Length: 263
Image 1 (tube, one colour):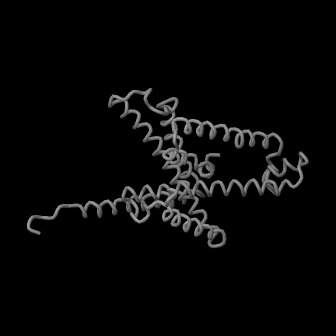
Image 2 (cartoon, one colour):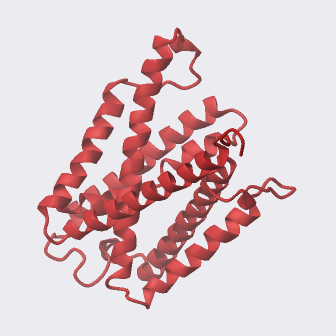
Image 3 (cartoon, one colour):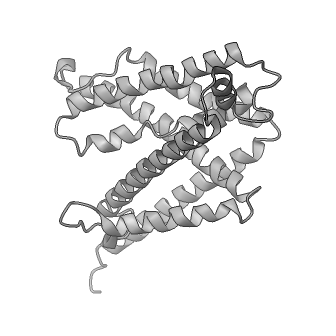
């Protein structure tokens, strides 16, 4: 169970996109709590409850051997075209994930261009407020990633999943750490808790628990020899990003350093 936790977390990543979307909503104090509740209830209904039903009906020796457990249950109930129905559901889910990932990547790339962490040429918006240049770059990388289905499918896909899974887990840790430090600094500087538009419940237990659980995933990967390469690829990619950030900052600081007298 512990060995496959990174794969499970990878499948659940994307919930943090609501934080990106909060900057474009008219009333985030209403939409964000509603989105958080929807995520919790959908996870409980479509994941936890569904797995509980499957575990109660399908013997574990037969689960996933020849076909999807969902298809097995549909066939047992007598629902026609069960396999086609599941393919439609899966395809719809994939398109939804692709759409949300494209949106988040585009907006983050645009925000990076505005802060100087990406080329300024990616910052212009269309008349409808869409960063088309950032969208085009993101779409190009998305299309290139599809080539992994027939080019080095056994190796390159695993590398991409390791990089995205590790990066997403680190992102969750950073989000929890930022929220934990923000509220402490906010109260220390004289802010009133009731003035916050949205207050995370059970503070500071929730952010600290999130940091602990996400950090434990790296320990599980290190203990599993088959998944240990994910640590190398994931942390290697993160180190490369930090090196690029350090290099860009050094160049930016050098460009603004005052010239010596007489030069």
